[in-house]
Image (tube, rainbow, N blue to C red; front, top):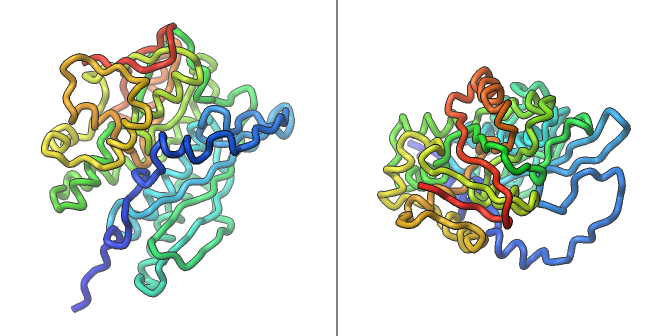
Length: 348
């Protein structure tokens, strides 16, 4: 009897935990990227935002992004769904509406049956269908590890664009999905994640962040990003650095996947979590007595994570209501933005 294919056995890492650590990435890039002054380029490389945005006219701007990674799960169909959901999230995080996608495919064709590869692609196609867009093409190569993702192309009204560097002092912070995907994936690889845990992880990572498009029309939503490979603290630091403000996050208010805290305390933590901390920990003030597992949850790499936004307190309840109308039942206020030196403070 043929043994089922385990995709993760062909990958040295998984999901957004494969991202190059922020510290090393900064060393690699340095000043090598030429920051061209192009008036139509509304968002480029200046603050590590989620997508590039290029203005076409007074009412339209193109949103362009790409995202791909190695398997976070063994099931090929689920891998395709997660990777596609994650890729489209960057468009929603800018307040955009997806138009179409291109597939990025790298597969060890001498190791994976064509039927398995087809299931990966089918998973991505199903997510794009749910988003109301076609996969209009792509590129494929023979690669030593399985890689799948999308180029996403969308559109946004320039005056409704949501950046990650425009938070204002006095704003509240709202997170749309619970943390813990990296912890769950670490447990899954070691056979310690039960069926309910897998179902919870899959439900979170395949939930499209479509609410971002609806939030675009709310002027009092001042800044938005999505939480992915660098964890909540990493993407929070990007928001604080860009806005030159200080973020205050209350750990007790941060939503978590049901077993995330227990699994983290048992040691199911990814190597990417520690690499994340090494990359930006100097900009974070953790509350006295904070334990390593608590820090690990805040630096946990999220694959297809939730939207993180800063909005005026007067619209916070309306924002939460919009999240819940679209099925984000764990969305919560997790802190606020304060005037001060750029950084992140974590309270118990």
